[in-house]
Length: 162
Image (cartoon, rainbow, N blue to C red; front, side, top):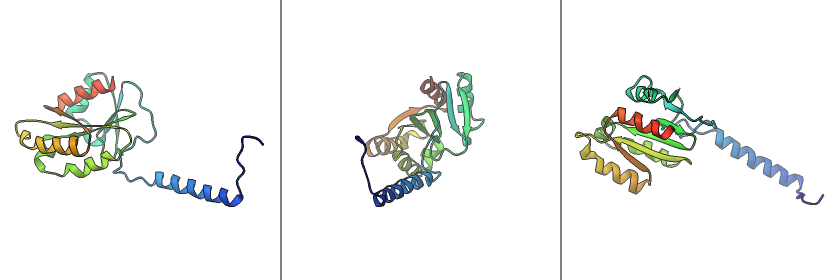
């Protein structure tokens, strides 16, 4: 029996309990925690949060010949352009509304994949953009891309997919 480690029955029970605990903690993820459901995205496909169904972003993606798959259980994420990238889109309204986006981005920070924040920078939201930039880039260490409108978001996401 060379190469095998012999452990006692008591040690096996302890190991089994540790495995069960770890598996239970994985299955008890709340819906607000970002995850990809263990799936692999095919090239040319993107997962889109259900709240964007029929939006200008989805139309721009479809015009770019990207296959859009709507998902109603994406947690804080808005888009999954690939298996290892998650995207949150902050609209002009989100920025003007105040700091409500911070809790969403705090949850995003805990994810294990690469994270990108797309934020609308318009004449109305530009006064709030500096504080967003400090929070996202300096405090959270995330990638921040300013966009002009939702059509531009669709084009950027299409580039991430391709």
